[in-house]
Image (cartoon, rainbow, N blue to C red; front, side, top):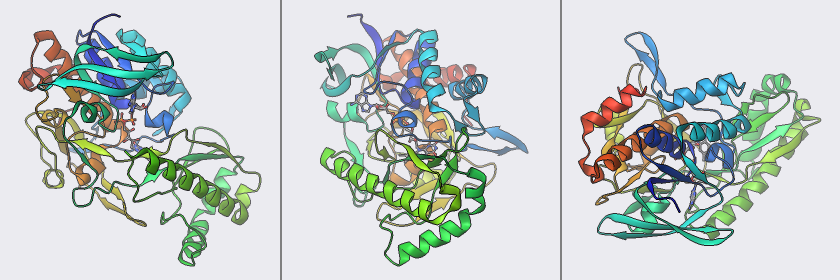
Length: 415
Ligand SMILES: Cc1cc2nc3c(=O)[nH]c(=O)nc-3n(C[C@H](O)[C@H](O)[C@H](O)COP(=O)(O)OP(=O)(O)OC[C@H]3O[C@@H](n4cnc5c(N)ncnc54)[C@H](O)[C@@H]3O)c2cc1C
């Protein structure tokens, strides 16, 4: 088995951008993913579209997620896989695989991380369940991009589940697609359908706690994307609870589909085209890192000295207890940044974490969790881990100025 400088676990936007970022900075990299393709939640959970992360700075409309994420968007456009913010996940899967190849990243699919050995802050070995039995892998450095801080947790680093007061997480949602829809007629009729949905919910005739119908166009004729099921008060890190969530969400898919079909002519010939392979988890564990990003930091528009990513996506909290979604929208020109220290599990010497599970409170996570921003966090993690690997340093001791210079040279926007 080849010895790598860096192993990245998790092939979502954070993991892919971490792997590419590290490889481009000279590290030898293996990316390991439990499913059969890349894209993470975009693929496993059918999450779409890219939520916006842009604002006007000095009067100029500025995309705040640049770097590798901008390259992904351009390449998607070249392959006819992106229109506006809506992308085609089948195009994405191949594109990300090609980008890993071009960067020289090795890939291992269908391998599920089950154990990690850590001594004195150093992760020494990680173990995967595979079709061929368990395999143990070793590298000098690791990036946990599992979304659930699975590697940090298994290694014994401290994590926080959901919100601080009661550990409740944002709801889980099983996304689904409906085909055979007269899409323009559907949107012309949408307000009436929403009102009817709300009335039937109020009368107890609809069980889904979601307050309204959340639906998006897709790139394809006659197909709609629904992000509208909602399962609350179940722990996304407890497999028995997740099983319950999958079953409850599947019942909600049928409930929603039957409601639409019965009440809109645009759905006369409609059928359920697909449901996601996995229920989507908005929030689970976050590491307890060298710095904990807070709601107060976001509201103060804090730009940290060790910024690696920028967010002005709203603090978008789907109620963890039931109905309702709260938003805090950042004023034009304002944003906060994610500091590098949030990627370092407290006490870690050779492990960084990237993605929706970096060190923060519940509210801050509700903003930076979207795909464009986790991609930038991933690039930050990959670049940092390569710098540590190059000089044999503890992840805490890398030179932050060089990290930022390298990121900017590679197209990142740091505020
Ligand atoms: C229902 C829902 C709707 C959303 N809507 C939007 C939206 O419209 N727009 C937007 O931009 N964002 C949206 N988000 C947020 C966004 O999709 C996620 O926060 C983001 O994709 C997280 O990226 P990530 O790379 O951190 O994790 P993920 O995309 O979850 O990637 C983690 C990867 O690690 C792998 N993995 C996990 N555990 C292991 C293991 N033990 N061993 C090996 N591999 C493992 C997984 O298979 C996965 O591929 C939504 C999220 C949800 C759940």
